[in-house]
Amino acid sequence: MNKTRYYVSRKNVLTWISALLLLAAIVLRIASVTFWKGEGVGCLTLWFAVILPSVALLIFVLQILFTADKRFYKTAIPVWLLCLSTAVYYTSEAKDERVALILLVWLMYIAFSIAYTAITAGRTKRDWTLVPMFALPVIYLLYHHWDAVKAFSFSAEPIVFAQMAELSAGFLLVFAIRVFTDGKYHSTWGDRSDGRRVRTLDPISIIATYIMPTRGGASNFVRDSIEITELERYIRKKRAEGLSDFGITDAFLAAYVRIIAKYPAANRFLAGQRVYSRDDDIQFCMVVKKEMSTSGSESILKLHLTPYDTADVVYEKLHAAIDKIRNTPLDSNFDNTAKYLTYIPGVLLKFVIWFLKTLDYFGLLPKFLLEVSPFHASIFFTSMGSLGIPPIVHHLYDFGNMPVFCSFGAKRKENEVRPDGSVVTKKYVDYTFNTDERTVDGFYYAELLRNFRKILRHPEVLDEKPQEVLHDID
Picture 1 (spheres, rainbow, N blue to C red):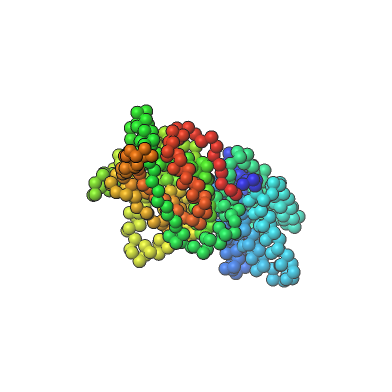
Picture 2 (spheres, one colour):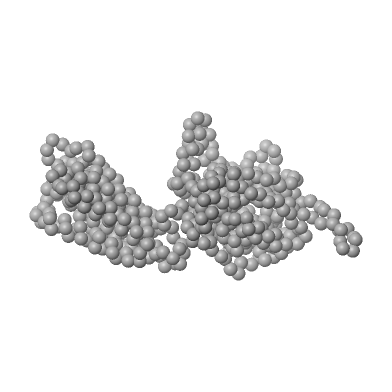
C-alpha cells in the first residue's frame, strides 16, 4: 500500500494535446493504406501496421481521458499491444535483415513494454525515466528520416510520422503525470473494481482457496443467542429520539459495521482463488418485501456503509433505501436485470450465467453489474423475526463473492433460575452466521463474534464513532 500511485488529470492541457497527437497518429496509420504503392497492402501489413496499432492507440486515448485519473497503470495494456504489433510488422518487412537484428528489435520493444508497465504500476518513484524512453526513439526517427520530415512529406513515410506522433504524445504525457498524495489506497494490477487483492497472506490461506474451490464447501456456521434486555431498552431510547422504525435489524447491522472497524479482515471476499479486501466499503444486502403478505413482491436492497457509521447513520441509510423500494412502483435495478435475463432461452441462459461467472473469476465483470448484484457484497441479512420463526442456516452462494450470511429469528422467552432460587423470565433472540472460512481463520471469527455479542449487550457504544478504525493487511 506504500507504493507510488500515478494519475493523469483531464484538466491538464498536456493530456489533451497527447490525445490529439494519438488521434492524428490513428488517422496517419489509416491513411497510410492509400499512400503505399505497389499491388496493394498485404493482410499482415494491414493488421499489424494499421488495424491493431489503431485499436491500441484508441484504447490509450480513451484511458487517459476517462480512467487515467484513477487507473493510469492500465495504459500499459495498449502499450503492449502497440509494441507487439509493431514488432511483428517490422519482422514481416525486414526480409533481408539478419536474425540477430530482428531479435534485438523484439527485445527492445519487450523491454520498453516491461519498463513502462513497471513505472506506471508504481514500482519505482522515478517516473521521469519515461522521458528518455519516449524522446530517444523520436530523435532516432528524425535522424534517419530527416528528408521526409523536412519536406513534410506524409506520403513518403506515413508510418514514420505516425510513430513520431505517438512517441511525442507519450513524451508530453509524462509531464502530465502526478502522484496521489491523499494517503489513500489506489488500485493497481491484480485488484478488482470491488476490492483490492490481499497480497501478504500466509501460505496455508493461499493453498486453501484451491483445496476448497467452492464457497458452499468452505462454509462454517455458528448459532448463538443474545439476551435483549439492554437491547430493547436501547431500541426504545432510539425510537424516543425520533428514529420511529428503529429495531433489531438496525441494531444488528450497526453492531456488525462496528466490528468491521476492529476486525477489518471480516470485510474480505474470495474471487478467482484470490482473497480481496473491500477495506472501508461495507456492502450490505437484504430482501425487502413491498407488502407484508405471502403474495407481496420482493426486491433486493443493497447498501454501502463504512466502519465510521454510527447507529443513527446506519438507520438513516437503511430506511431511506427501504422507503425508496416500497414507495417506488418501478422495480429495482436488480429486478430489471433479472427480468432481462429471463427473456433468454434456458439453454442459452446457462451459457450466459457461465460466461458471467468466468468474467467474475478474472475480475472482468462490469462494475454496474457488480453494483446491482446481491451476490457481490460483504454480508446478507435475513430476518425471521417478522415471520415469527427461528433463524435458518442460510447457504452461501457459489455465484458472486459474498462471504457472510446472517439470520436472526423471533424473540423468545426463557425462564432462568437465579442464585437465590427465584425464577426470572428473560427475552432472547437467536441468530446464525454462515461464513466462508477461506477469508479468515476460525479464531478470527470467534473473536469477531464475541465482540459482536459484547456490543449488543452494551449497544449505547453505537451512538458514537469508533475511537479507532483498523485497516486490513497488505
